Length: 89
Image (cartoon, rainbow, N blue to C red):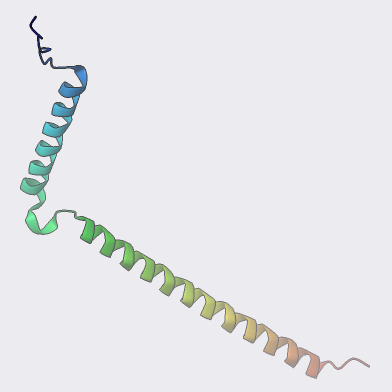
């Protein structure tokens, strides 16, 4: 009695994984060739860009808050002056 081992077959999953792996390799190589080593996108570079974008948004938000505070103070001062010029009673 002999036990026959199943013959390995290449399935659709194996082929698609191989094609995907090759495609990633080609894209990676092309990116290096086109933009150069120093300009390739990396996780660290993406994270730094996100930090910079967050800081820029925070700066714009702080500037807007400052402008709103100035406008509110100017409006309150104008109302105060208006009441002083035209007292009620």
